[in-house]
Image (cartoon, rainbow, N blue to C red; front, top):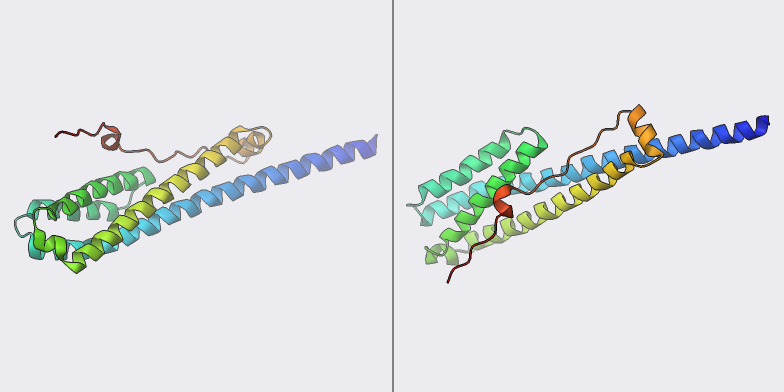
Length: 181
């Protein structure tokens, strides 16, 4: 009888350790995937001044557009929660779209090699941000599933592993695109 209880006790301890370690692993993956988003946001943040300076030389009458980009960049720098940072990032993406649209009105800007290189760099960075957000949400989903599943939900509640919110798409990006000819 005693050996059976010992075996059951050992199995419970092993399940507990395994559950705890898997929760720690997923929690660390969430932090690592957020760090990837942060790296790409920093990269974009560093490219913005060069883009603004390049556009200034060609589009002197577009001060309002340039100010929106600078304001969006500054709001990202102010930090805040992850949700606030992603809202500022979405604002920055919108501001960048308006700068890229300027090239249609300024043919010299559109053919400037520095502008084209910066536009390509920023487009690539936007894609990387999108991928990093997707990876973050996937990791959060796996973690949240783990803390809600038996038997790790018991370990999670005792050790206070809390649900993590996924990054949401901005309301403006959910609206239907209007196309007119």
